[in-house]
Amino acid sequence: MNNPTRLALIGDYSPDVPAHVAIPRALEFAAQSLGCDIEFTWIRTDSPELVGTPQLDGYHGIWCVPASPYASMDGALNAINFARTHNIPFLGTCGGCQHALIEYARNVLGLPTADHAENNPSADLPLIAPLLCPLVETSDTIMLVPGTRIADLYGKAEIVEQYHCSFGPSLHYQSLFEDGKMRIAGFDKEGQARAFELTTHPFFLLTLFQPERSAFSHVVHPLIRAYVQAILQTAAL
Image (cartoon, rainbow, N blue to C red; front, side, top):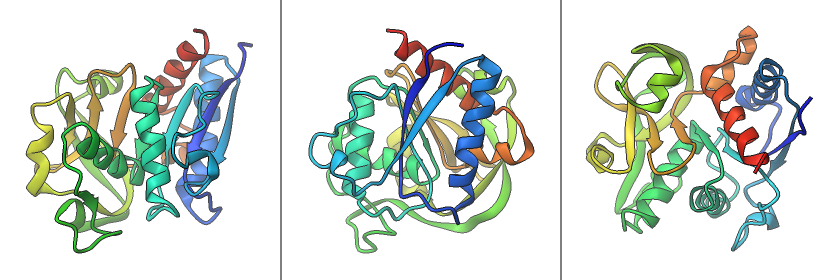
C-alpha cells in the first residue's frame, strides 16, 4: 500500500447531513479502487487553523464540503484561497462550490462585494442567490461542456447527479465565468451553470451537485477518484 494521503475536509461536521456521512465512504471507495490509504481530518470553518493565514501546509488535498451557511464564511474562504494559491488539489461541492466562486470573484476578478445571499440578503453583488427551483433531495440532468476536464473524467456529455441546495450561482452574473480561467464545465437544461473548473490549477473542480452521494450506492465516483489521484501525486512530491 502507498503512504496515506492527508486530506482536510473544510466544513462544520454534522452526522445529520447526508453529504457529511457520504464523504468518508466516497473517499474510501476511491482509495480502494486506487490501492492506496487515505487519511482525512474534519476542520470546522471557525477553527483557529483557518484564521488569517490558514495552517494547512501538512495537507495534500482540501475539500470544502456542503452544509452552509458555515460557522465562519471567512474561514471557508481562507481555506479555499490557500488551496487555490498553493496549487493544492481542491474539490468544492454544493456550499463549497458556492464559496469557491465567491473567493475567486473577490480575489481574482476584483469584485470585493461578491457575496452569498444566504449570509447577506442585501449584498451589492449577490453572486450566489436563491435558486428559482430549489434542488433539495433531488436529482437533475447536467450537460457537460466538451473539452473540459470534468467532461473528460465522466467520459460522456450528459450526466444525472444528486443535489441538496437552495442557493446557486446567479444567472445574472454567470457571464463572469464564460471566458476566463475559471470556466463553466456543466449546465442544467435551462442553461444555468452547475459545474466549474479552474484551468490554471492542477486540480480545482467545483460542483453544485453532490458527487459524494454516489457512496450510498457503493459507486466509485469518477470525480472523487480523480481527486484522490491528484492528492496522491501531490503527496509524492
